[in-house]
Image (cartoon, rainbow, N blue to C red):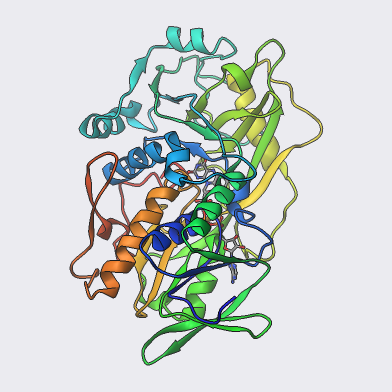
Length: 434
Ligand SMILES: Cc1cc2nc3c(=O)[nH]c(=O)nc-3n(C[C@H](O)[C@H](O)[C@H](O)COP(=O)(O)OP(=O)(O)OC[C@H]3O[C@@H](n4cnc5c(N)ncnc54)[C@H](O)[C@@H]3O)c2cc1C
């Protein structure tokens, strides 16, 4: 390993790896540093890795639409083999329940139409034909299981769903990250594992490099913070937090894996689903399991934690999520052994990521991914590399935001949307839905 590089990337999760890949393609000599033993071992490895196109904002939809094409043509994006094989994109499509909470999906479908993203309206009967295990009664508002009214329906039925065919999931997000590591290495990138950055050094008013826990100093005129739930800690090392209007913090999450109900193969015949009537999203999981995540309903307390000291065990939150899905799927068995994952989101104040420069010259950030940016990692890498190149050539992104033509969808996006200095975006769902 050398002692100086063109750019150091803090973190080798999926977004860090994609950033390294795109910078390497542009000719930067990059070093990705991660304190964990391999790429994608942080929050990326526990990601549900759902790929979907629907977001609350137009810009969110545009980015996710662009992101879809990378996953859909993964081998071509990577351009190299991986000795472990390539991650698989299971293109199931996604059903989103129409509820009062999401305005029966009217605004989202308008965004989809404006972008040319396909969707299909699905009445309750056709939804039931696709998901015969479903009880289509409405259970809203979402409640905690200890609420006396939990599991009671008003008697109303849900209004059906919208089906988004450009959706699915990556069953092995860690492998996907390893794939990108190999692709980046083929372009000259270097990865250093088991190495914790403890200092971001500065000289002459700009970033100068990093210092590792063992005292090793590595120099670079560019440092990119892609530290996931540790992003705010790395920003504090660089002293850039005061210049940010939107900040980030770590939120604890539990995801449950439960067996598919008797007589239904969810792994084969299930879909990605988003159901705000019960406050949960689901997707098929290997071993004919159903993966259950939370849509952060108002009745659940948010658990902001120290990313180096949090409870990695399941709690009653695991049961709450499984019980909620058991309202929709009454035949769902509730296992006594809890399986799934506990990990952290790196949440921004408005649940929209920050892809930006900072007030310290040469220090950039791709953070605040709020539980919903795995799908956008390849396009985030493209955005970060372009942003870095333009800023280093002298463009003042704060006053003259970088615009980027998206390769697959042909849209032009204004990267100012992801600025650290933006006002809170009130159009956001303020949840994992983005
Ligand atoms: C439970 C869960 C479910 C999710 N589901 C989805 C989903 O369905 N769809 C979707 O699109 N997104 C989802 N996400 C979000 C998505 O996984 C993240 O947005 C994405 O993985 C973030 O990647 P990253 O590279 O930014 O960060 P990470 O994967 O967190 O990587 C950051 C890396 O930085 C390293 N690091 C931190 N500090 C230091 C330091 N000081 N020195 C050295 N290394 C350091 C860490 O070790 C870590 O490996 C989910 C996230 C979670 C936790």
